Image (spheres, rainbow, N blue to C red):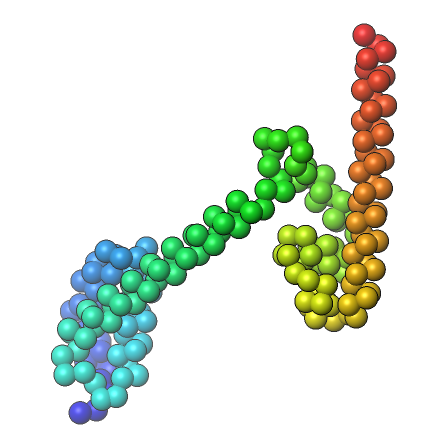
Length: 173
């Protein structure tokens, strides 16, 4: 036996394409991907399977199930990440204001913004960040401290302005 020919592949796609997509749809949200991956695997397979039709259904099922598992893993990871990252929860007053934080981060030099984001939201160590930004670990730590001090100073200034504005409103009543 040899590899499957181009003509045989074309005939299989014409004959089974829609059926394979429908078959894969039972397991995953991207059945076309499962079918395409199976067809690519069929083209590469040497020797060609004795029954390409049955083989395709088997491989499409396996590909579709793998894609579905990947989707579920990604969803779990995204949910866990969202639950873990409650920095910008608008329902509680103790959480950070997303818009204000974005403004503060935008005011930082690019390298400091990268370091702060990687450390706080990426949960990277200073050593890992040093690799990412190609700087010595001590420099990364120093830049992180400077950034946090800068943001802290802006926060203090902002709170002072808010308190002054509230006092003025209270006096005008």
